[in-house]
Image 1 (cartoon, rainbow, N blue to C red):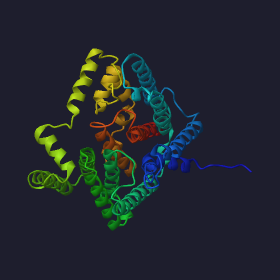
Image 2 (cartoon, rainbow, N blue to C red; image 1 turned 180 degrees about the vertical axis):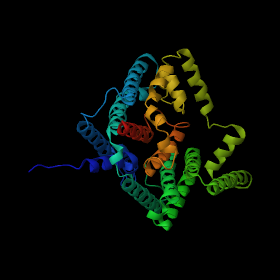
Image 3 (cartoon, rainbow, N blue to C red; image 1 turned 90 degrees about the vertical axis):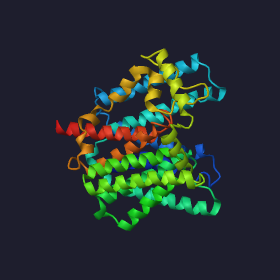
Length: 392
């Protein structure tokens, strides 16, 4: 008997894995007393296997002349060469040197391979509505469990950096707001509002600026997409109220909310939380070799905390150009993401989630430590390329 596997089902599982799988993978290791790195191993194996399966399935349809594929593969090969060269020719702390092989493994199997597989999917056949249902349910469920656990132990279940902890809530907020604005009739409004405020509370509780900024950026994008002046007035009013709240907190809040303190210092005094020297050092390294760039990281493994500065520092103008060439299908099919009447409505949600992580990489994390940004990049590129291919 021949066993057949539904390709659409495989695509759905893979997309769910890259969209919320990492959030699941960083959950429960702490409550169970396990090493978070070991706890996430099944997730990494799953991503690798799914990627190989999809690439194998689509091997005959892969166009190696596709500019996005050339850009993706070419950049990461170039980056690995620069990584090896940097570790062999620049001084690093011993613990940073020990991470060399792990970094190469991560780039090849957790970044390049899944990103390549995501470019191979036919997104016209993907059930994004179903995927969204699973995403909002999983994120809401994990955060509810998180706060129940926190009430009991005064801790949270997620073994992650506080900024990424805030972005878990930001994802839930963005999905909830999108569904309230565009798909309200298909969902229970009480549930969506519950998820909206649960996500926002998690963003504020994380004490990080980046998730808050991402919430504003993505909310503004969705309101513009809605094209309703009433909603635009709402969001402007909320922004003004938030600014007022931050100012009041600065003078009367006794510094109780750390994220508000950092936002006030950032806007009022230009305080970048120690990032200024990192930016300056990145520019110095770039200026030493503008075409190819210099070392990929500083001696202690720290990075510039800005994707553009890191690209210029590590790979120069050449690397910056190669990196962003892959987004050409997105630019050519921008209407899919900016016009409500064009394409699947859920394409706009994917773009909003991409914007969230694009906001993040302006102020935090290095090129290969935020897989969600790279995965959502490949998804929107794949959507643009799929539509272009279907029109030919």
